[in-house]
Image (cartoon, one colour):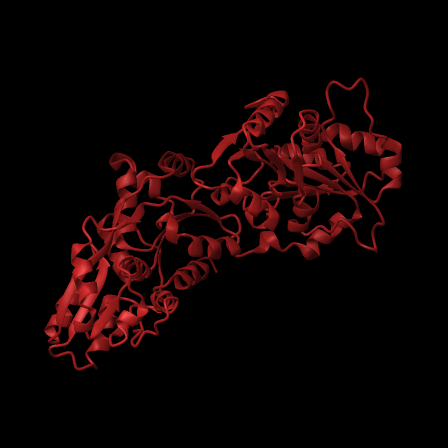
Length: 505
């Protein structure tokens, strides 16, 4: 049997964008991914669909699997000849017990590699605006566990040397022992006025930073009800947070936004909102699938030379059309005599990726504007191919026929109801932890409402801000009982994000 290999991979501190390039490559190739509570679930998107994904997280003493069983599991999977990625929060060799797992692999004769990750000891303070070193404040840093091995007979932390010999102290997993940490440092000679910061869920949209001094921080933490996981930073550099705090000042920081787009199309909106500081909760209400029957489109593709115009009203329409064109053994050269129109810049950009420049891109991005653009064109007896969604609005073909065109409207994709994360969505609506719901089409509105219990619809969305990509989507939402707070003036993803920003500004 082929020898398996294990990669002990650091997942970084929480922000999925802080994953390393090598870690991503490992995840893409893995047969098995064994991951922790602190390893961002979004990183699992890099794993292959056929990969086995196993959660072994440890949260506040609640162990899905004890460490010895995790070790056994890693060895067992590797002995099956599989490539195993052990995905651990932060860095596997910084208070991550990665060394213990590596020792077990070495004992079993299993090849392994260590893929370092960005440790939270560096990243969380940075996202809180606290540099660990600064020549005006310190010349040394120490990383200390705030939760020593309970089986040790006595502590190995040298409090007098730490208290007076190191500039900045960073304690891992120390919130529960915060009173003892503060007391020991003061007793060992550290100034009670020394600044202290607690950073909970550092680098994520849930980040909370609490500051005080060694003599006040325990009371501050108790008043705030601060719970693990959090880092403790002790030292004069904490004072710089007042000047250098950047992450928590992002315009949408602290806001949770539901993204209802199909998962395959959601990344652009998720990326933009995340960059503005929002937590994005993905709850796709639709999924885009091929049509039940390709025969109508196939017939059109076989007669492309008879068409004068090819009009695309969505990115999906472009993608599915060209996918089918290629499957028929043709390529963009089959469209050499056909003029093209795209409903907006995103659709035009996708068309450009296939080597075609759109002849018409209307000023505003809806069917009515496409019609206005074609009113300037001689359309009498012109043959138009309109590949689009099964459920598309009828206005475009109707108006083109009015202009004298011969229109062949053909289905290249359709949308279906999706119901991912529905239970969590309802739970978060109930607890009031959703701030904004975004709608990017009428179908996302209809399907979102269908996911909610009818008798509780009003109470669940009463305090939620509703943001729509444009007036048509807004009209649908209002008809279904939503109070729409935000309607984008530019009917694009950037336009929607800008409208949300303006609302909160």
